[in-house]
Length: 336
Image (cartoon, rainbow, N blue to C red; front, top):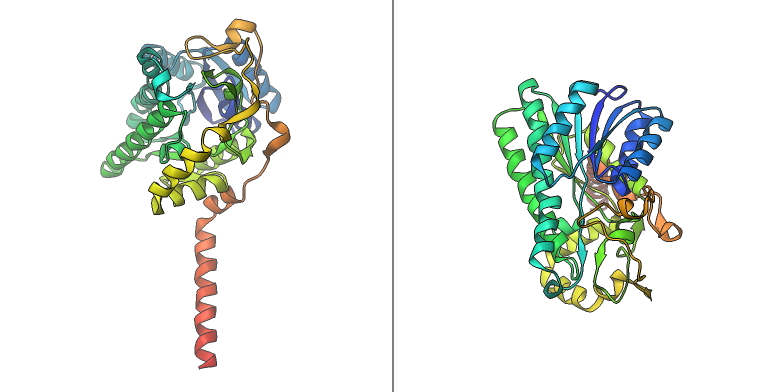
């Protein structure tokens, strides 16, 4: 398991989970290629990686353009050498009811979120398959399994990524490839998404609590990159609870979210009139602001996840559960 000196590509690296992930790889001495559209965010992310101890390569790229993505992959290998890990994070969204989203906006979200992952995975596999080595981490969400109101475009794209990931993984297993793909399902995270997402809500948007810091997400991604044979990892107790509830009683969850899903995604203040949006152009291109990894919810965000530990150590937990069950059965027999 190579760590120091790894060549890593991170899409969506200018802010949020991508930014925190790039910095975390930098702290391990990795060579990190940073893919995003915003120049200010890319510059800030490069500083983060270099201060942490890694090397950074800035690549201004729109992941919805397959030619730009392919060129970025080529430049990465020309500069740093063979790519060991590719992490797909880049996304955009529209916060609105379905009937308030235009076809052009829906198309753009799908091209960035879903096809951006597809194009990036194509570029990575083009190089990894001939070497029979490499790992691709698809950053997903609990919303890859469970749709919620006001996020039809985002949920649809995350569901698409989930299906794409499963199908591709089956093909790699069939071919006995040593290239691995894994997926990390995320909870609500304190990222700049809510500061720059296109919104038609009456109030400012927020992640559905509980909210986790982006560094928690980054730890899950690094672990998945190190141990990619697992098909997916869950980060956050809310992710586990959502996926389990959706598997057991999806209809009841529909009704619950219909009652609570509107208010839980808005804070009690109006949407600012000068609210930036990053759907068509990078938000930092409009104001020159570096949005960093964190959003506006630091005071309400958790910096650790017991569920992430459990996801990483499911084997230990299974052994422990079996031991407890065995002890209980022995105790029952002894009493008899």
